[in-house]
Length: 297
Image (cartoon, rainbow, N blue to C red; front, top):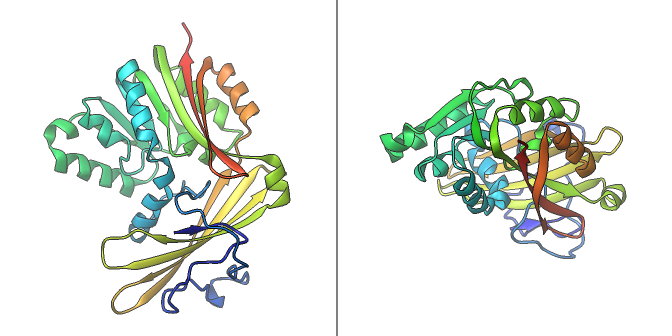
């Protein structure tokens, strides 16, 4: 259950309510507002781009949930381009492992060692045929240096928003220079409408994290946009309640607001032309955009 800013938070048992203790900081956690509407299936732009600790795995996966439908589209694209596939910001293998299960050789790149360990473990549990198709590489995308050639590169799960705008052109050039002729770069991001950002630069969401380990987890997430720097900070106030105790955790993610025109110019400068663009409206303020870019001859 997810509730946007300006609406009532779900009715949460007092023991589970994610109240921010004063010791966590001077800023008080957002209080429930007057009920307006409930959006049950989306968390616009809340996807985590920071490494998650072991206790945050369930939250991390829930935040990527709105992007899960794109797996089918990425697989369809891979069937038209062939492999190898480069999965940038792979996390724990949300795309890399399914791609390997479909027979594609995948190089998975992420900065979080624990996520790559989860990826390797998942692939090994499926079997040696899948594990043998996946190679992992730990590095930050801003320091990416590739050695292979690829038919398809992915920046999925809004990973492009994790790259500082000043460093993005170099990343796109690096990726483009390692694509085979006719190869493709596919990426997605959350596009925020400028009037909406100006009118509401602070947004609050509340939701329950789907878990299957006996722990109840509720989260209040606060988005704060800064237009002069084109940046965004999301703070997650989580309460995780087991049989004996409740753990309260505060996590923070820093991201960048993607300017579609600037991104298009950077892709063109890198030698990539936008072949396809898919837009999906999330609400009146945001939409999800998926771009497919082809490498030139």
